[in-house]
Length: 278
DNA sequence: CTGGGGAGGGGGCCC
DNA sequence: AGGGCCCCCTCCCCA
Image 1 (tube, chains in turn orange, blue, brown):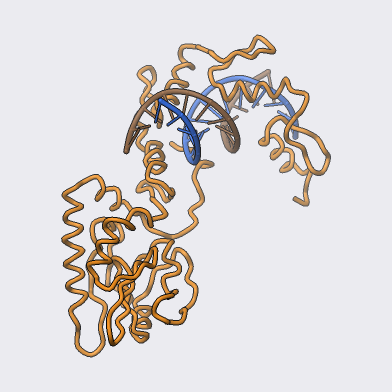
Image 2 (cartoon, rainbow, N blue to C red):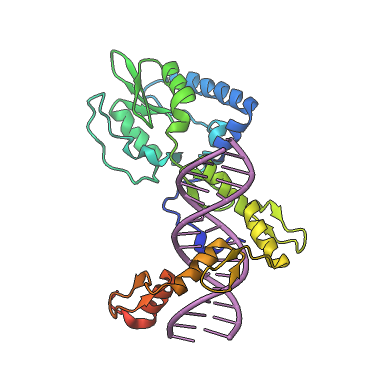
């Protein structure tokens, strides 16, 4: 199990984005995404009587299937990525800003109604639609590029912005988020633990961690201290050990000027009451 | 309580 | 893109 100290604090309430991974990995799914996208576009562009009501979408395209939309309550929640926090800023159509939203916000349906009144409609899949009298504009949620046609925006989203604009990749096993897909994949290994020790069955996230662990069985200690006879199985631990030979200790208490070889020791010292003000 | 060793995870870089 | 490696960090445990 991953240690709790390694769990990043979840800064937002955003939901997992695993559809991104799935759709990238599977070309069939990707095709279905496009199909579903255009169905949504057609539905969206069909004018409805009186005022334009936002289409009742049951689900987003599969890239966002984890963000299923439900209308069981009066308000439908429309998820937005963190980069959408400036969604309501409109630099192209002359609309005044509607206010600043928290990064993790979900738009409520009343927000859409509000946008309707201002002549601007959001599409949960891609961006805002500014339907002025003369012509419509289609603006990307993420990079705010404007297009005269919905297909133009769709193409932009599919070919250019879809990946570049997504700032976070969320773990499906926990609520951690990463700025890159590679970092997320690496993190997921801490859940799946694919590297298993044949001697004791203990599992690790990365091969080199397993290698280090195997040294605890073999007793191999390839990292020797040049100052004493000690040897270590792990280079990091040798480095920590070398600090004990150093006259200069890097970490100093601000209150009593006592120095420590490790920041963890300084932290313990401060927590023990030397620096009650800090 | 303090210091140090053992063990393991995350991010970054390179190939 | 993925694996290997390195550095840094943290916690646990023990003397």
